[in-house]
Length: 363
Image: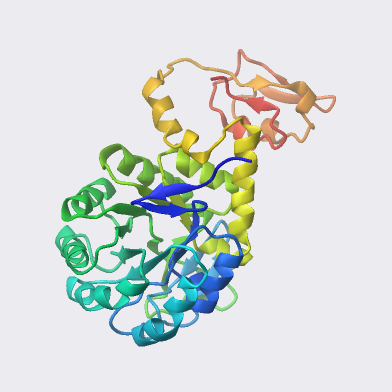
Protein backbone atom coordinates (compact mmCIF):
# COMPACT_ATOMS: atom_id res chain seq x y z
CA UNK A 1 0.00 0.00 0.00
CA UNK A 2 1.48 3.32 -1.07
CA UNK A 3 1.70 6.38 1.16
CA UNK A 4 -0.85 8.92 -0.07
CA UNK A 5 -0.35 11.43 2.72
CA UNK A 6 0.61 14.95 1.66
CA UNK A 7 1.67 18.10 3.48
CA UNK A 8 0.82 21.49 2.02
CA UNK A 9 1.49 24.85 3.67
CA UNK A 10 2.25 23.07 6.95
CA UNK A 11 -1.08 21.20 6.97
CA UNK A 12 -1.04 17.39 6.95
CA UNK A 13 -3.66 15.62 4.88
CA UNK A 14 -4.40 11.86 5.00
CA UNK A 15 -4.79 11.80 1.23
CA UNK A 16 -4.71 14.35 -1.63
CA UNK A 17 -8.28 13.92 -2.92
CA UNK A 18 -10.58 16.72 -1.76
CA UNK A 19 -13.94 18.19 -2.72
CA UNK A 20 -14.01 21.45 -4.64
CA UNK A 21 -16.48 24.15 -3.56
CA UNK A 22 -19.91 23.33 -4.97
CA UNK A 23 -23.05 21.29 -4.29
CA UNK A 24 -21.19 18.32 -2.72
CA UNK A 25 -20.09 20.64 0.13
CA UNK A 26 -23.21 22.81 0.22
CA UNK A 27 -23.58 22.51 4.03
CA UNK A 28 -22.23 20.74 7.08
CA UNK A 29 -24.13 17.49 6.50
CA UNK A 30 -22.84 17.28 2.92
CA UNK A 31 -19.29 17.80 4.15
CA UNK A 32 -19.75 15.05 6.72
CA UNK A 33 -20.77 12.75 3.86
CA UNK A 34 -17.61 13.67 1.93
CA UNK A 35 -15.51 12.85 4.98
CA UNK A 36 -17.26 9.49 5.38
CA UNK A 37 -16.75 8.89 1.66
CA UNK A 38 -12.97 9.13 1.99
CA UNK A 39 -12.01 12.74 1.24
CA UNK A 40 -8.62 13.87 2.51
CA UNK A 41 -9.82 17.37 3.42
CA UNK A 42 -12.97 19.46 3.32
CA UNK A 43 -13.23 22.59 1.20
CA UNK A 44 -16.49 24.37 1.98
CA UNK A 45 -18.74 25.98 -0.60
CA UNK A 46 -17.75 29.59 -1.19
CA UNK A 47 -19.61 32.11 0.95
CA UNK A 48 -19.90 35.83 0.38
CA UNK A 49 -21.48 38.66 2.31
CA UNK A 50 -24.88 37.96 0.72
CA UNK A 51 -26.37 34.57 -0.16
CA UNK A 52 -26.47 33.72 -3.86
CA UNK A 53 -29.69 33.71 -5.86
CA UNK A 54 -29.14 30.74 -8.16
CA UNK A 55 -31.19 30.41 -11.37
CA UNK A 56 -32.96 27.13 -12.10
CA UNK A 57 -32.36 24.76 -13.75
CA UNK A 58 -28.68 25.12 -12.97
CA UNK A 59 -26.98 21.73 -13.59
CA UNK A 60 -26.98 19.30 -16.50
CA UNK A 61 -24.93 16.31 -17.52
CA UNK A 62 -23.80 16.52 -21.14
CA UNK A 63 -21.75 14.14 -23.25
CA UNK A 64 -18.18 14.29 -22.00
CA UNK A 65 -18.84 16.86 -19.32
CA UNK A 66 -21.19 18.89 -17.18
CA UNK A 67 -22.79 22.34 -17.38
CA UNK A 68 -23.79 24.49 -14.44
CA UNK A 69 -24.87 27.97 -13.47
CA UNK A 70 -24.07 27.34 -9.82
CA UNK A 71 -22.96 30.38 -7.83
CA UNK A 72 -21.65 30.80 -4.30
CA UNK A 73 -23.56 29.53 -1.28
CA UNK A 74 -27.28 30.18 -0.99
CA UNK A 75 -26.93 29.82 2.79
CA UNK A 76 -26.37 33.03 4.80
CA UNK A 77 -22.92 33.28 6.33
CA UNK A 78 -24.53 33.48 9.80
CA UNK A 79 -25.83 29.93 9.38
CA UNK A 80 -22.42 28.73 8.32
CA UNK A 81 -20.91 30.29 11.43
CA UNK A 82 -23.60 28.97 13.78
CA UNK A 83 -24.06 25.45 12.38
CA UNK A 84 -22.32 24.29 9.22
CA UNK A 85 -18.61 24.89 9.88
CA UNK A 86 -18.79 23.17 13.26
CA UNK A 87 -20.15 20.02 11.64
CA UNK A 88 -17.26 20.01 9.19
CA UNK A 89 -14.67 20.59 11.91
CA UNK A 90 -16.09 17.70 13.94
CA UNK A 91 -15.02 15.26 11.20
CA UNK A 92 -11.37 15.81 12.16
CA UNK A 93 -10.31 16.60 8.60
CA UNK A 94 -8.56 19.86 7.72
CA UNK A 95 -11.16 22.48 6.77
CA UNK A 96 -10.40 24.99 4.04
CA UNK A 97 -13.12 27.64 3.92
CA UNK A 98 -14.17 29.09 0.58
CA UNK A 99 -14.59 32.88 0.53
CA UNK A 100 -15.40 35.48 -2.12
CA UNK A 101 -15.00 37.93 -3.67
CA UNK A 102 -13.76 41.49 -3.23
CA UNK A 103 -11.21 42.77 -0.74
CA UNK A 104 -14.02 44.38 1.27
CA UNK A 105 -15.91 41.06 1.33
CA UNK A 106 -12.81 39.21 2.49
CA UNK A 107 -12.07 41.85 5.14
CA UNK A 108 -15.59 41.33 6.47
CA UNK A 109 -15.65 37.52 6.32
CA UNK A 110 -12.14 36.24 7.03
CA UNK A 111 -11.97 37.19 10.73
CA UNK A 112 -15.42 35.71 11.30
CA UNK A 113 -14.61 32.31 9.80
CA UNK A 114 -11.07 32.17 11.21
CA UNK A 115 -11.95 30.10 14.32
CA UNK A 116 -12.99 27.21 12.05
CA UNK A 117 -10.42 27.54 9.27
CA UNK A 118 -7.23 25.58 8.69
CA UNK A 119 -6.94 27.58 5.48
CA UNK A 120 -8.94 29.88 3.22
CA UNK A 121 -9.65 29.39 -0.47
CA UNK A 122 -10.36 32.66 -2.26
CA UNK A 123 -12.42 32.39 -5.42
CA UNK A 124 -11.52 34.77 -8.25
CA UNK A 125 -14.27 33.55 -10.59
CA UNK A 126 -16.18 36.83 -10.69
CA UNK A 127 -13.36 39.33 -10.12
CA UNK A 128 -12.36 39.76 -13.80
CA UNK A 129 -9.07 39.85 -15.68
CA UNK A 130 -7.40 42.80 -13.93
CA UNK A 131 -5.20 41.17 -11.25
CA UNK A 132 -5.47 44.07 -8.79
CA UNK A 133 -8.85 43.09 -7.27
CA UNK A 134 -7.54 39.56 -6.75
CA UNK A 135 -4.31 40.84 -5.25
CA UNK A 136 -6.21 43.19 -2.95
CA UNK A 137 -8.43 40.32 -1.80
CA UNK A 138 -5.34 38.22 -1.03
CA UNK A 139 -3.75 41.06 0.91
CA UNK A 140 -6.97 41.57 2.89
CA UNK A 141 -7.03 37.88 3.80
CA UNK A 142 -3.35 37.88 4.83
CA UNK A 143 -3.95 40.88 7.06
CA UNK A 144 -7.05 39.34 8.66
CA UNK A 145 -5.99 35.76 9.43
CA UNK A 146 -2.93 33.67 10.16
CA UNK A 147 -3.75 30.60 8.08
CA UNK A 148 -2.63 29.63 4.55
CA UNK A 149 -4.39 31.41 1.70
CA UNK A 150 -5.25 29.25 -1.31
CA UNK A 151 -6.24 31.20 -4.45
CA UNK A 152 -8.46 29.60 -7.08
CA UNK A 153 -7.89 30.75 -10.65
CA UNK A 154 -10.38 30.57 -13.51
CA UNK A 155 -9.34 30.07 -17.17
CA UNK A 156 -11.62 32.79 -18.53
CA UNK A 157 -9.44 34.30 -21.24
CA UNK A 158 -6.87 34.87 -18.51
CA UNK A 159 -3.18 34.18 -18.89
CA UNK A 160 -2.98 31.67 -16.05
CA UNK A 161 0.73 31.91 -15.31
CA UNK A 162 0.57 35.72 -15.05
CA UNK A 163 -2.44 35.43 -12.73
CA UNK A 164 -0.61 32.90 -10.56
CA UNK A 165 2.47 35.11 -10.44
CA UNK A 166 0.31 38.05 -9.36
CA UNK A 167 -1.26 35.90 -6.65
CA UNK A 168 2.17 34.89 -5.41
CA UNK A 169 3.32 38.51 -5.39
CA UNK A 170 0.29 39.44 -3.26
CA UNK A 171 1.14 36.77 -0.69
CA UNK A 172 -0.83 33.68 -1.68
CA UNK A 173 0.39 30.44 -0.12
CA UNK A 174 -1.00 28.05 -2.75
CA UNK A 175 -2.75 28.08 -6.12
CA UNK A 176 -5.88 26.12 -7.02
CA UNK A 177 -6.35 25.61 -10.77
CA UNK A 178 -8.65 25.50 -12.61
CA UNK A 179 -12.27 26.51 -12.22
CA UNK A 180 -15.06 25.63 -14.67
CA UNK A 181 -14.68 26.99 -18.19
CA UNK A 182 -17.04 29.17 -20.13
CA UNK A 183 -19.45 30.56 -20.78
CA UNK A 184 -20.75 27.58 -22.75
CA UNK A 185 -24.14 26.66 -24.14
CA UNK A 186 -26.14 23.45 -24.03
CA UNK A 187 -29.49 23.01 -25.78
CA UNK A 188 -32.42 20.69 -25.12
CA UNK A 189 -33.26 19.69 -28.70
CA UNK A 190 -36.78 18.61 -27.73
CA UNK A 191 -37.76 22.08 -26.52
CA UNK A 192 -35.17 24.24 -28.27
CA UNK A 193 -34.40 25.85 -24.92
CA UNK A 194 -30.99 26.16 -23.24
CA UNK A 195 -30.30 23.58 -20.55
CA UNK A 196 -29.43 26.33 -18.09
CA UNK A 197 -31.99 28.68 -16.59
CA UNK A 198 -29.78 31.76 -16.56
CA UNK A 199 -30.95 34.85 -18.46
CA UNK A 200 -28.51 34.17 -21.29
CA UNK A 201 -28.92 30.39 -21.14
CA UNK A 202 -25.16 30.06 -20.74
CA UNK A 203 -23.44 27.84 -18.23
CA UNK A 204 -19.94 26.76 -17.21
CA UNK A 205 -18.26 23.58 -18.40
CA UNK A 206 -16.66 21.10 -16.00
CA UNK A 207 -15.94 17.37 -15.85
CA UNK A 208 -13.73 15.21 -18.10
CA UNK A 209 -14.01 17.63 -21.04
CA UNK A 210 -11.79 20.19 -19.30
CA UNK A 211 -9.13 17.85 -17.90
CA UNK A 212 -6.60 18.45 -20.73
CA UNK A 213 -6.95 22.21 -20.15
CA UNK A 214 -6.54 21.75 -16.41
CA UNK A 215 -3.43 19.59 -16.83
CA UNK A 216 -1.84 22.18 -19.10
CA UNK A 217 -2.61 25.04 -16.72
CA UNK A 218 -1.31 23.15 -13.69
CA UNK A 219 1.94 22.27 -15.46
CA UNK A 220 2.46 25.82 -16.71
CA UNK A 221 1.92 27.27 -13.24
CA UNK A 222 4.15 24.70 -11.53
CA UNK A 223 6.96 25.59 -13.94
CA UNK A 224 6.81 29.30 -13.20
CA UNK A 225 5.47 29.77 -9.67
CA UNK A 226 7.12 28.54 -6.48
CA UNK A 227 3.89 27.62 -4.70
CA UNK A 228 2.00 24.35 -4.21
CA UNK A 229 -0.68 23.85 -6.87
CA UNK A 230 -3.92 21.96 -6.28
CA UNK A 231 -5.17 20.51 -9.57
CA UNK A 232 -8.87 20.76 -10.39
CA UNK A 233 -10.78 19.89 -13.55
CA UNK A 234 -12.02 16.53 -14.76
CA UNK A 235 -10.73 14.44 -11.86
CA UNK A 236 -13.02 11.42 -11.65
CA UNK A 237 -10.71 8.38 -11.47
CA UNK A 238 -7.51 7.36 -9.76
CA UNK A 239 -5.54 7.78 -12.98
CA UNK A 240 -6.60 11.44 -13.08
CA UNK A 241 -4.93 11.96 -9.71
CA UNK A 242 -1.79 10.27 -11.01
CA UNK A 243 -1.70 12.53 -14.08
CA UNK A 244 -2.25 15.67 -11.99
CA UNK A 245 0.68 14.73 -9.75
CA UNK A 246 2.84 13.94 -12.78
CA UNK A 247 2.43 17.53 -14.00
CA UNK A 248 3.35 18.82 -10.54
CA UNK A 249 0.14 19.09 -8.52
CA UNK A 250 0.41 18.63 -4.76
CA UNK A 251 -3.25 17.59 -4.32
CA UNK A 252 -6.48 17.51 -6.34
CA UNK A 253 -10.04 18.67 -5.94
CA UNK A 254 -13.17 17.39 -7.64
CA UNK A 255 -16.78 18.48 -7.84
CA UNK A 256 -18.51 17.04 -10.92
CA UNK A 257 -17.56 13.43 -10.14
CA UNK A 258 -18.97 13.78 -6.64
CA UNK A 259 -22.22 15.24 -8.00
CA UNK A 260 -22.63 12.39 -10.47
CA UNK A 261 -21.32 9.49 -8.38
CA UNK A 262 -21.94 10.53 -4.78
CA UNK A 263 -19.54 11.23 -1.90
CA UNK A 264 -18.20 7.66 -1.86
CA UNK A 265 -16.28 8.56 -5.01
CA UNK A 266 -13.50 10.11 -2.91
CA UNK A 267 -12.52 6.81 -1.33
CA UNK A 268 -12.89 5.00 -4.65
CA UNK A 269 -10.52 7.43 -6.38
CA UNK A 270 -8.02 7.17 -3.52
CA UNK A 271 -8.11 3.36 -3.76
CA UNK A 272 -7.60 3.47 -7.54
CA UNK A 273 -4.63 5.81 -7.21
CA UNK A 274 -3.15 3.60 -4.49
CA UNK A 275 -3.53 0.51 -6.68
CA UNK A 276 -1.84 2.24 -9.63
CA UNK A 277 1.11 3.27 -7.47
CA UNK A 278 1.46 -0.27 -6.10
CA UNK A 279 1.30 -1.83 -9.56
CA UNK A 280 3.97 0.54 -10.85
CA UNK A 281 6.37 0.05 -7.94
CA UNK A 282 5.99 3.41 -6.17
CA UNK A 283 6.02 3.66 -2.38
CA UNK A 284 4.39 7.08 -2.18
CA UNK A 285 2.50 9.50 -4.37
CA UNK A 286 5.21 12.12 -3.84
CA UNK A 287 7.57 9.99 -5.95
CA UNK A 288 5.59 10.75 -9.13
CA UNK A 289 5.04 14.46 -8.48
CA UNK A 290 6.58 16.38 -11.39
CA UNK A 291 7.49 13.22 -13.33
CA UNK A 292 6.16 14.65 -16.61
CA UNK A 293 8.22 17.82 -16.14
CA UNK A 294 11.37 15.77 -15.61
CA UNK A 295 10.69 13.63 -18.67
CA UNK A 296 9.96 16.66 -20.84
CA UNK A 297 13.27 18.18 -19.79
CA UNK A 298 15.03 15.09 -21.20
CA UNK A 299 12.86 14.70 -24.29
CA UNK A 300 14.21 14.89 -27.82
CA UNK A 301 11.68 16.06 -30.43
CA UNK A 302 11.56 13.44 -33.18
CA UNK A 303 11.22 14.49 -36.82
CA UNK A 304 10.79 10.92 -38.08
CA UNK A 305 8.01 8.37 -37.69
CA UNK A 306 8.15 6.06 -34.69
CA UNK A 307 5.74 3.14 -35.18
CA UNK A 308 3.98 1.75 -32.13
CA UNK A 309 4.91 -1.58 -30.58
CA UNK A 310 2.32 -4.31 -31.19
CA UNK A 311 1.79 -7.11 -28.66
CA UNK A 312 -0.26 -9.52 -30.76
CA UNK A 313 -1.11 -11.69 -27.77
CA UNK A 314 -3.10 -8.86 -26.21
CA UNK A 315 -4.99 -8.01 -29.40
CA UNK A 316 -8.70 -8.84 -29.33
CA UNK A 317 -9.36 -8.08 -33.00
CA UNK A 318 -11.77 -5.22 -32.20
CA UNK A 319 -10.64 -3.31 -35.34
CA UNK A 320 -10.67 0.15 -33.69
CA UNK A 321 -7.07 0.66 -34.85
CA UNK A 322 -7.87 -0.37 -38.41
CA UNK A 323 -10.98 1.80 -38.62
CA UNK A 324 -9.19 4.97 -37.50
CA UNK A 325 -5.84 4.53 -39.27
CA UNK A 326 -5.72 7.15 -42.01
CA UNK A 327 -2.44 5.72 -43.34
CA UNK A 328 -3.74 2.19 -44.05
CA UNK A 329 -0.92 0.88 -41.87
CA UNK A 330 -2.78 -1.59 -39.67
CA UNK A 331 -5.27 -4.32 -40.50
CA UNK A 332 -6.91 -7.13 -38.58
CA UNK A 333 -6.21 -10.52 -40.12
CA UNK A 334 -7.61 -13.68 -38.54
CA UNK A 335 -8.76 -11.59 -35.55
CA UNK A 336 -5.28 -10.19 -34.86
CA UNK A 337 -3.80 -6.83 -35.82
CA UNK A 338 -0.99 -6.72 -38.36
CA UNK A 339 1.12 -3.54 -38.47
CA UNK A 340 2.87 -2.31 -41.61
CA UNK A 341 5.64 -0.20 -40.11
CA UNK A 342 6.69 1.15 -43.51
CA UNK A 343 3.26 2.76 -43.99
CA UNK A 344 2.93 3.95 -40.38
CA UNK A 345 3.27 7.71 -39.83
CA UNK A 346 3.74 7.38 -36.06
CA UNK A 347 0.69 9.54 -35.26
CA UNK A 348 -0.13 7.51 -32.14
CA UNK A 349 -3.92 7.52 -32.55
CA UNK A 350 -4.20 3.73 -32.59
CA UNK A 351 -2.40 3.52 -29.26
CA UNK A 352 -4.96 5.76 -27.60
CA UNK A 353 -7.83 3.77 -29.13
CA UNK A 354 -6.50 0.30 -28.24
CA UNK A 355 -8.62 -0.85 -25.31
CA UNK A 356 -6.64 -4.00 -24.36
CA UNK A 357 -3.29 -2.18 -24.51
CA UNK A 358 -1.89 -4.23 -27.40
CA UNK A 359 -0.40 -1.10 -28.97
CA UNK A 360 2.08 1.09 -27.11
CA UNK A 361 4.44 3.87 -28.10
CA UNK A 362 8.14 3.18 -27.47
CA UNK A 363 9.95 5.36 -24.93
